[in-house]
Image (cartoon, rainbow, N blue to C red; front, side, top):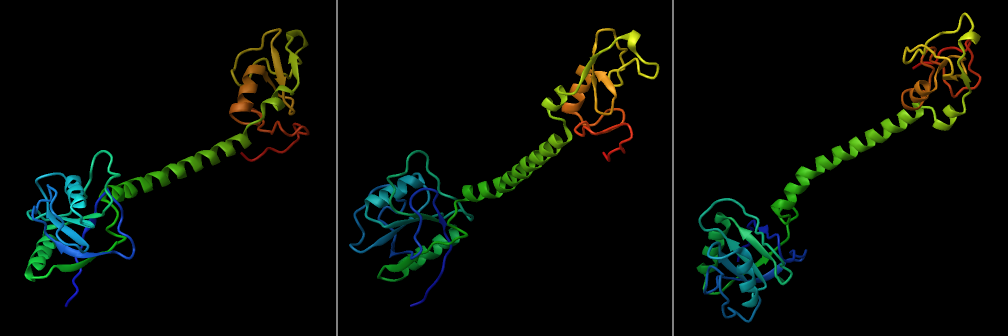
Length: 254
């Protein structure tokens, strides 16, 4: 007696093969296509060896399940290559595992099964590399980098948002900064006549926001600047969060 190992590919439907494997006599049924129900080939546990074609994969497995097989091996006698057996719709009625055999494996096992007068005992074993259906493997290969990139991008965006929030002045702090009404007659000689942000001249009656550094701007202009751009004075770059800022305060690094 000798032991030979052949590769297979588990179907995308039906149960998985357990770690201890499945033992049974490998038998080609009277309907070698597996497209019809046959009389149980043996009273012992047997595994149906059927060929591809004639009907769908799921029909073959259902027919062999009704015929008493404990598993099904579907082989391709004509083409080299591997196929993952899929089935549309509900397949919850399938209670036995099934595998696909490429041309080389199928023809070799078919030959061995007919070489002796007594059926050949085989064992179906799970293989971590081959039990995954092709679609599952493709999904993992394609989606894993994508998911990782999405995670990295979201993390980067969160960090950017947190960093940006640190650069902005809270709305409640800005609205609590003092405001004055501009009067041309009250303007001192060294005070500007225009807003350094919008470059529009001040008009009598307009509200000006006074920053801790004593620079003044249109309320709408500087409020938007501080809450959406930077929490620093547009002119001297001093932090408006520092109430002790004066024109003698050193410039901040920005």
